Length: 104
Image (cartoon, rainbow, N blue to C red; front, side, top):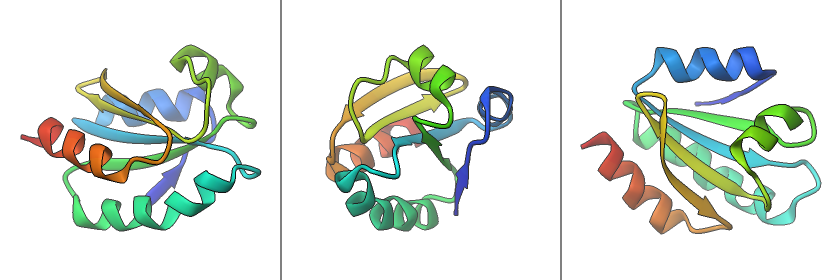
């Protein structure tokens, strides 16, 4: 299940409470974001040892700016609060491969 991040406090809490966090930086107006959303949801069910979250770049501008988001969708994988990967654009194969590495 994918959680919606509401604010910076919510984001920090998720990062500190979970070992592996997969973040989808998205926007409601972004076509590719809508296209990849079902695959992201599917992945969240396939990998229960990771936490999957969405950050709306318009609603959470402070988080997006701190993360250096320049395009949507952008995916970050955090392991023990440290970002270990960044994938810009729709590349589900790379996202899954990087997630498997983070979970290993």
